[in-house]
Image (cartoon, rainbow, N blue to C red; front, side, top):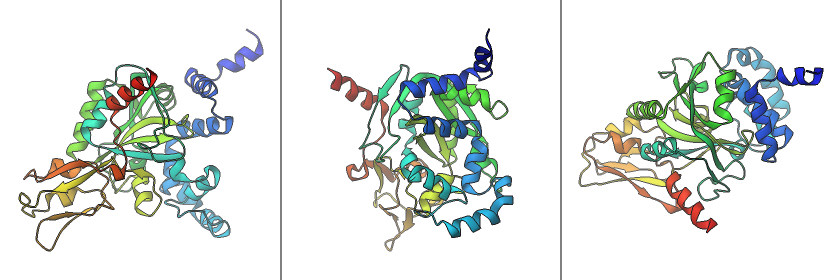
Length: 323
């Protein structure tokens, strides 16, 4: 083996696979390096963006001084997010999530064949990172949530974020061995159902540096999630599910059980003492529907909010377009 081969094999197999896939997809070297840093040092990257990583807290005075000198183009949601904005154009376009009701996200986990669906403009209303390319979709890794990892009084359990398909699953498993593990589809479904029962929101996450595609399923709470915090503060990092919650006034008794679980603050008791939905804030996640003891809330399609990410329908549409 020559010295070049030795140097090559110092690089892990999952890293080689990541860069090989990126080259095949025509991803720029800059984006591949960005993706490598993101996947290799996930907790520093996301914890830094939120401003709650211990290292970032020590650097806070320097960061604040820098942001005064070089204000971000859009309102930052964390101490370092302004630098991400400057580097990638806009945070929302390059790193974003799609809210999904439980049944839809379970469909995505149960995909049993490689698929490719590109340019989902109506489903994922962002400029970049809106493809679903699943190689080895049964390869699923769960890891400790980077948003909860360094949060004060985080929601539990920690291991609720899932990376789906290759080359991402192997990359995370190899580079985050202490905080990740491979799981089966049945285990993934059990995690989704348990998080749903806790009232947490399912998001499919897309990132330009992760080869411009879907790569992870997260179960999010507004108290810990960086993306939800950014969205609340004006950086539109999340797309609605394509549904809206609708209240049956005849069935609603105004108990406010659903309001307590709404992660987006979209529910409140109206003047007539039944629940009212703020259609601007509602993301159609479906949490309120499952938490209404009277079954007075349902999700209805809202085309003006976009098209749901329903993988079986998308696969059928893609197959028809090829005929």
